[in-house]
Amino acid sequence: MRPTVLCFSGLDPSGGAGLQADIEAIGQSGAHAAIACTALTIQNSQQVFGFEATSKELLLAQAHAVVGDLPIQCVKSGMLGTTDNIAALAEFLREHPEYRYVLDPVLVANSGGSLGDQATLVKAFVELIPLATMLTPNTVELRALTGEQDLEAATQKLFAMGAKAVLVKGGHEDTADYIRNALYIDGEFVSESHCPRLAGEYHGSGCSLASFIAGRLAMGDELKIAVQHAETWLFGVLKQAETPVPNGQKIPKRF
Ligand code: PLP
Image (tube, rainbow, N blue to C red; front, side, top):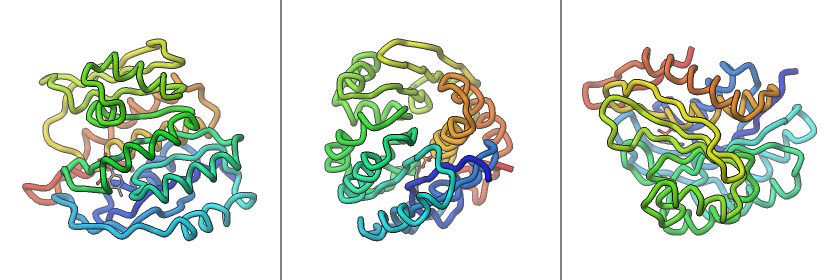
């Protein structure tokens, strides 16, 4: 049985983001994906119409069902939806300190739609940050989590909040031709990557990247190598992304 990543993530009916992105990305990384579903969202490639979150009892029951059944090496979280679900995941991770954990601190969809109450989610994430092997915030999430506008100060604040490693994703920054991601481990800058900025908006790019990293960690990569593999893979699947409708975000073609 392949090493398994257990994802705590939501269903996106468009198949671009959320748990489908996780399953496809982790499958491509060589690992197996298992899912504890946090929420059912109502959305398409253009907008979010709403969501219904799973209860924390149901969420934990899903996770507990596969512990001991599958060779889980790593946990990955995306949309958690409620502070109850964040607390439930923290409880689960404390029961299983042997799992590596990739925290993608999802606050809003790329289309701008709400995936939970941002102010309360930000406060609740404080409990998860010290439990994570790595965080993968985009710069909007990084600023929201820390309250710091300056990116270097915000990254250092995340370390002061207990983070062990942070991949700062630069896709939302004002760099017209390129995107810069920067990897920090234990408060130290480790490496950066630059890739050309592709035209258009993409649905589920963050989910895909974080999940591929989790998959490579489950397969035994070191953090820096896992990130490099994931960035190279993501650029390829974004280049071949498909546009469902003229106003829709592009859907990464992960196969
Ligand atoms: N999880 C779910 C269920 C979502 O619907 C979304 C965005 O729509 C995300 C996560 C985050 O998506 P992205 O990878 O585009 O940041």
